[in-house]
Length: 272
Image (cartoon, rainbow, N blue to C red; front, side):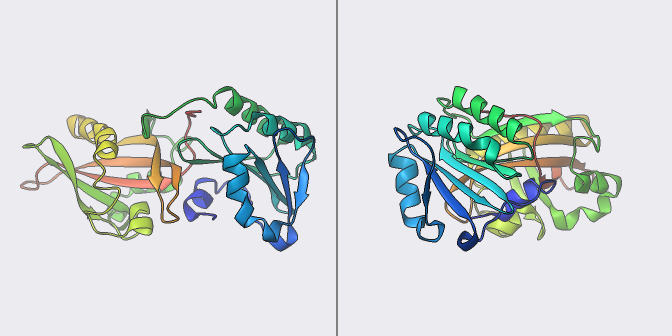
């Protein structure tokens, strides 16, 4: 299933989508030389079995590009080396979709870069993620921050429909979600009820709220790159990269609040 979040995260790339009736489906399976051709339209039922049980790597190739899909913690290394040998023939852009405690998605416009990235992932494929959220502060610069966030920083009055407002409760030392903007990423996937996932996931909240505290402490806007594992509406866990702008909310009698505006976009760091 191709998710809108992933499409938005890689907006600078051509989208790698396939009509299975006009695409080639190939499999690399451990112990077999070369790639095996199968009927793409009838392959869906067998795909999960080959990925999970046989350490297979699934390649879908069409005129729009190439998708390479595998499970990093399966016995897939031999299969990946078969794919590496074939990769110079791949049509770009190349989408790497691999599962390591959740689905990652990366795009490359050069087969050589995709090859080097697969080799990196092979070297780190035994990594297990005990942390499900990674946060790094970045400079307030259009070079590293999504354009929508910089536009809102320059015109904060436009933020409401895109933002999530969180209130600090000094009695339990936690932030709670007070309002979810109708055009925020959370609203797109989970709706605007403040007691819905992921607003109620304590481990996620604890890690992301450190930036809220910092913004309240300094009284200045802050921008972070965030990579977090979410269970999306397809019921699969996906690693979602996004940028977030945190604005301290001023106003007498309102308590301590932050307004958080997020945009799904590639982040400047890798965790595998």
